[in-house]
Image (cartoon, rainbow, N blue to C red; front, side, top):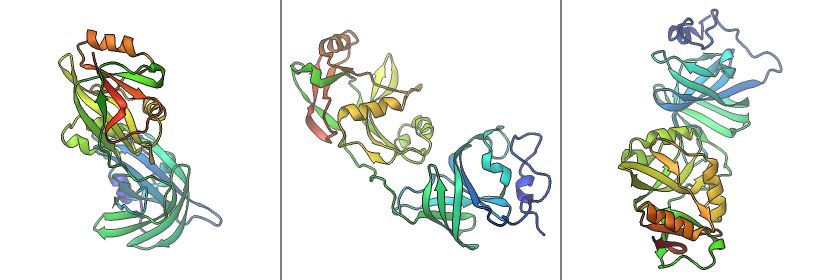
Length: 319
């Protein structure tokens, strides 16, 4: 009988990688009453991807999915069929050394059981029962090692927004009811919406350094609003709003809710940060903007939704 892990072993040196490398062929069959297990691992290798592994006849049949599982039936994702992995890989996580096959950080993104509806050489239909991933999916072969994965049931997920930036109206003075507003610096830079999906962002085409930000989100979807500013001679992307978060649109939610969700992301890096915000403190913020040579401040109504285009819910006040 063929050793299903022969290809797996040929790619790995047990003395150089922490991955499980069992010395003997796996036992076949799942046994009576044995549930089929699955694992999805987030793999920060040369290129971020997710590894979907389904237990089948004593091994984990595996696919690398560059953008993760599709969130709705309207989008299919590429799934590259890879070598079978040993059952010990169900719980594997750690750092595969650089230079080794698959070098990079691997974490368990989700695990659980699944039901098989169909399994052939060209099509696999299954139902996942995990903590983060659940629902009916089908993997279908397209060409060579390339397959596609399609979600067969509807997910409770809002459409990804196609938004324009919300623009402040100009006023000579701050609003009288300062307690109804949060006050932020006007950075004098260029607005930039950053959509993130599958650990990638289209904004990286113009700004390649944003790839690191997108990858840090893993499988979490988001739409960030910010501004490219130049501070002390260095370009910095300051984020001050969040329009979409992990499958949910926030454009109709109050500014306070969006702001809390943005701060919970704890964004901070060499090229980006979350902009500070001060509820009710118009004059101290305006004075600080003037001292730092910034063009002014922006007053944002605490109860305001995100309105693409000009809006009087945001007010630009020159410093």
